[in-house]
Length: 225
Image: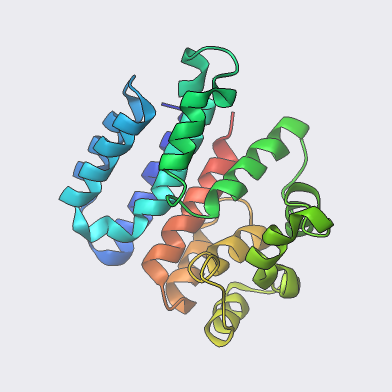
């Protein structure tokens, strides 16, 4: 299991369990076991889903943790497979099978990987313009998905309170409805911050999810190797 993925998973579950007053040790151990297994990706997905089926109190984290499972595959599992595996028919079939899984968090985690590879600091403008290429004509699908972030970029320089209050007023797209607050908060404070996490718990209307995802992102960013 990739080290940065493991740390992000544990930190996210810890914050979620604290916010919801739910014990997370059992699901944490089960997920670490599944993530670390050497098996076909779709078989791993099946076991991953079994863990969440058995732990319904954590259901709202299923798809963002699926993104973590994908990142773990890209950074760890794929190294055990043949070269150019991601260009094979087998992987193409897996992508087709899982096309409806996960969230836009995967793009942010891939962007963080790229930032570390290029030794640059994450920023919302760079994420939108240089990574997602939202200003390019051929990437207008990304523009529409991320339009809420594009039109509210100033919030990434405001405060957690402002981000949360504006999120309540905006008619957010389906893709960004849940992720708007943790995404914006990450670009406001990309480092692990207890104060920022506490502000999310204080001001967010979806505090358990937002603080869990924010902790996932910032701990992945901190420990990316």
